[in-house]
Image (cartoon, rainbow, N blue to C red; front, side):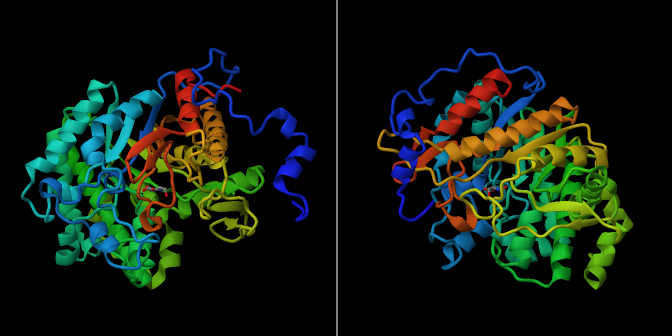
Length: 489
Ligand code: NOJ
């Protein structure tokens, strides 16, 4: 916009003022779900699971309540200089005490599923084998409340809050012993909750917490290890996943569904020619070789081992067998495109193009806008690994949404983002890609890790002084989609 033309002038000149852009009459937040039929061909499958997602450290608070032990994130946030706004998850959304009201919010959206995570240090405060029954009680109460409201609980076992004791005793994921401790914890959860929790995710986003926590020192536990040790730590997480699958099968109810939720490296053909589509498929397999592919294929790819060279993880054939224990589904967290790909003559057959600095992003600079990943990523994953059930375990965006003088939150950027990503996801399901459900991240604003409370991802706004929750425009949008099981236009 030229400097000498103000935003208001620009709107007037463009004829927008006459359209009443500033006029606050009835907003979509107040309007009931429209009776308008969805456009033909815009529906999701009839049994599609609509949900929303959160994680323990990001929402629960009550960091010392009822015998909970410290996690690596408690220690990390309390050390100065790690979190942008100097905050911690000590109180967060105080969900530990307000869970009943929060279940009410999920219900208001019309969600029939809720993905939450269990805090390992609530159940095993020192990471050992002595359980803390009061910790389990909280999740019993939460699960019962969800079920009483017709919402299916989907539980994640590890969303980054490792018991601090395991970091101190074993070096956290640097040790295979942590993988064994995780399996014991997973078995315990399965034994006590799988009568009501039918779907369990082992670990969330290994592709984030290992490089950021062990390589870059950005996330807890804040280590900057050489690449070989990072690769070894990732291998231990894959092992933990496999051991947990076995433990859940051994100790949980028959039929308990088990998988992982991973921030798959999202590859897209730069221009969708058959050659580039093939190249993006190859890239999806290779750029996810260190975790998803070894789990789903039972081996590290040749290209991955060649790339890692002397830094490749050390592993045994037995470990690969455990790691690749069959899963019931794969959960994919999708936010930003990571590689726009073209075909290449060089093995293994793809080139990722550099991203221009002007590529559009949401309010979080890392969150590049690429709705097409919601189509390509599940399509490639289903093809490469012959998957029968995929969940989009997270998708959503931050927004600089503010409470307007009228008390409402007009997060139009989030609505734009969701509309576009869901349109691409709908296209995938219409073509038969087996995506069975979608969990919007996030139910409410919460502790966004190193960004503290400054990046808001919720469809409910949280006032962290009063803990008041207020639905944003996007909550209304999502409710419409769920109600219609479709995009309207
Ligand atoms: C993925 C992580 O699982 C979640 O904890 C985080 O808040 C969102 N991405 C948004 O960054």
